[in-house]
Each structure stands twice: as C-alpha cells, then as structure tokens.
Amino acid sequence: MANEIAASKEYRQWLIDIKLRARAAQLKAATAVNTTLLEFYWQLGADIVQKQKNAAWGSGFLKQLSKDLMAEFPDMKGFSYRNIVFVRQWYLFYSTEDTKVKQPVSQVAGQAVLQLVQIPWGHNIAIIQKYDTVEQALFYARKTIENNWSRSVLIHQIESDFFARSGKAITNFQATLPAPQSDLAREMIKDPYNFDFLTLTEDYTERELEKGLIDHLAKFLMELGAGFAYLGKQVSLPVGEREFFLDLLFYHTRLHCYVVIELKTVEFEPEHAGKLNFYIKAVDEQLRCEGDKPTIGILLCKSKDKVVAEYALSDIHKPMGVSEYELTQALPDDLKGSLPTIEQIEAELAEQG
Image (cartoon, rainbow, N blue to C red):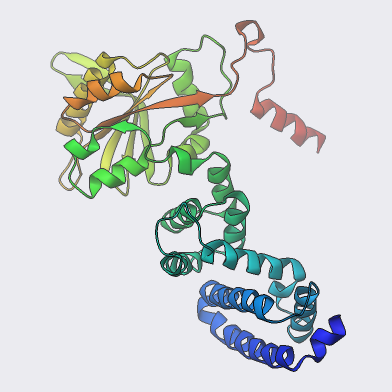
C-alpha cells in the first residue's frame, strides 16, 4: 500500500508542494519561528484532512508522509508520525463544527489561528489533549498569551480547572468600578481557590492559614494569578486612635490597584463585608497614590451562601468579591507535628544524594 501511495502522481505532486512550503517556512523561521511553523502546521493539517477525504490512500497515508518528509528534512523534528497525527488532530479540533460554540465554524477557526500561532506547539498539544470544546481551549490559549505561561504553569492551570473557576466569584465590581476595569477585576478572581499545597489541622486558625499561604508564597501567587505583587501580612493601618491590621496586602500590576485579602476560616457572614469595606477605605485614604485605581477587596471564606453574599455586597460601595477556598484533607490534631515537612523531606533527600 505504501508503494502505491508513493507512486501516485497526485501524491508526489502534493509532496513537492509541501516540501517547497516547508523550505519557505524554514527561511522565515529566523525571525518568527513559532508563528511561521504553526501557520505551516495549520495548512498541513487542512491539506491532510482534505486529501483523506478525496484521495483513496488508505490508513498508511500518514506514515508514508512522515517517512518522506523526515527523509527530506532530517533536522526538522516536526515530521514524526506522532507529530503529524497531532497536526491533523489540532486542525480538526478547531475547524470542526461544535454545537457548544455559537460562532460559525469559519469564524472560530480564524479566531483560533490568530491566537494559537502565538503560543508554542507543546502548549497547543497540551490544551487539546485536556479539553473537548473550542471555548475552553481558546480560553487557555488567550491566558497563556496574556500571562506568558510556561508549559508547566499552563498544565497546572488546566489541572486545577482554571477555566471553571475564573470569573465565578460573587462581586459588586459592575456597580463599583468603571468598564473595562470591572471586567478585568471580575476575571482576576477565582471561585473557589485551590490551596491543595497546604496541610493544616482540622481546627486551623486564620493565623495558621495565613502563615501557610505566606510560607508557600510562590504557590499562593501562582494560584492567585498573574499580576499580584505581595506587599505584606498583618499590615498596620492606624485609624483615629486605634490600629487595624490587614491580613494580606497585594498590589495588582495590571489593574494598577491595591488588593486587600481577608481570610476567614468560617462561613461568610454579612459583617465580614462591612469590615473589609472599612479596610478598603483606609487603604484608599492612606496608601493609594495618584495614578492608582480604586482598591479592591477579596474575602476568602471557608464557605458561603450565595444569596447572603449577594445581599451583603449589593449596598457596599467599595469594590469587593467573595470566594471560597479549598484545602486538602485536614490532618487530625493528634497527628500535628508527627509528619515531616516538605523542607525536611527535601533535606533528607539531599543528604542521601
């Protein structure tokens, strides 16, 4: 069967055309490696799908194509049989009708190509292997471009289901912030937050939760998302003759505003919003400078009643959101201190090495 494919005049002519385009892609690669290569992959995927519809070359077609292209371009890694299968799968994923997407297929495909050629090929493969809708896939492609995610960070965000959690928090941003900042702020907050990197006892306190987050600051910042700059914990704010302390204070470099995060180890209560409103007011008065946008508050609670939270925020005039957080299975109190810490395990492994 392979010999029949190779002897086909149509196949040989098409192969010549692919070789010419591949060489053209190689020449452009010096200035735009990723974009040029992925544009080539997109057209190759389209060609493969069309040829499989119109030419009776059988199941050996892709293996023969891979063999011929690798022989012509031995230094080009993208022509393995496995990768050519991915090229076909990638093209079909974004160009096939999906009833969950309300845009015309041609429009979706055009939108996809513009975004997808801006991220590495490995990122593209990771996305389509995890998701089955164009909407979800394009979301991760867009976030990769916006945040310059590495492949490992992208996979982490996919595995933590960032798509399902993004913009799901209860907020009053639409009523308290001008557009487009209100939309950007809403997208910034997740619900729930995933703190699976923490191991706390069943009766952990707010201070223990706070300490755990700061002790794992890099993972905490990754979960918060791009743009958060950590400024401090238990930040002092004198008001009148009293001193108040913010649990956590951040500055968001894209929203250009302070972000106050208050931690609650209990279910959300309306008075939590009132206290956070007070803190936001104090930050606006004492820390906010010319050019800073209005300070935003985030209440991270163990749980919440959605209706209660919506009621509580409806008459609050400072921008804030309410989200839940999730932990791994909490340890019983009697096991506290009996298990080694991550640092102790790493130290022991280092000694063994």
